[in-house]
Image 1 (cartoon, helix red, strand yellow):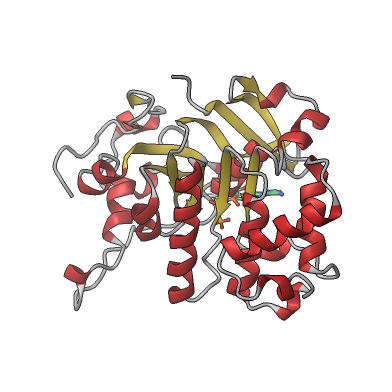
Image 2 (cartoon, rainbow, N blue to C red; image 1 turned 90 degrees about the vertical axis):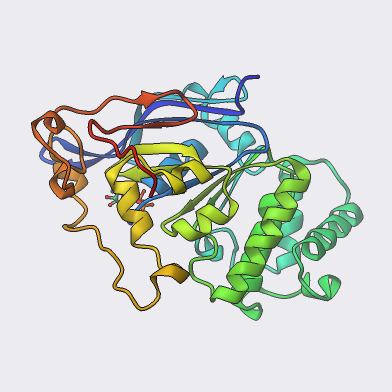
Length: 323
Ligand SMILES: Nc1ncnc2c1ncn2[C@@H]1O[C@H](COP(=O)(O)OP(=O)(O)OP(=O)(O)O)[C@@H](O)[C@H]1O
């Protein structure tokens, strides 16, 4: 079966002056099946959000997708006109941001925002839109949804605002939701509740999800597969259990070792030495080689993809043993 999403050698660049560009996304390829949840993980600045924005068609100019294909249900989004892309956004592909105020308008009542989103793609009457908006709030666990339709975003807590943003993303039952660190700003108990609700709702509807996070623990709890980004590239991808139990790329291994676990209590957590490279000035070859204990002269060439489209790593000296 063809995947819902097939990203092929996607490159997204931003000009940085003097005719030079920064490659935030550097030949990223991956596939996502229907109903599949992909965890896109990596440190800050590794290109996760820009990958999401590229798929949404929301890269800020003068940044642009400069090459590659984004096949969504058989259609190449990089070739689609702005009108076609707008019509897909919200209806078939939705995004939830870290800050719910990226979705919500501070001066409009919540009910108005929900019904406007409904009217954008559906020809329905006022009463039906109102009923659907109320049901959407109830679905994401907002108490007294009928009354809350009249409230403004500032009258909600951060967690409740994020629930509303999720309700808006779910309104048109999209095929794909890109969730960009939607719970990072919330405290952990609220975080866990919202993740569980989001999981339940997307599972019920068979929605495909790309969950972007720097937190490997969150990704491992909800993703079927994990893609690890470093320096704008996916350096490893595979089934969540496989990646966690037997990471092949030294960077993935470093990430796993830096996550606190029950076994690591009382011991000092491992850190990945060095700093993330500047994307505007990347080392030649493997981007991780300047921080990698296994690097040698071979790593001055760019590693290809070892493995198939579903599970692969990009390393000349991968780990063979379990973590
Ligand atoms: N609008 C922009 N203009 C210029 N550079 C940008 C823009 N947006 C992102 N970048 C650059 O692209 C790179 C990747 O950023 P991105 O936000 O995708 O990283 P990330 O992995 O999502 O990290 P974070 O979790 O911090 O958002 C960064 O170096 C960033 O500075």
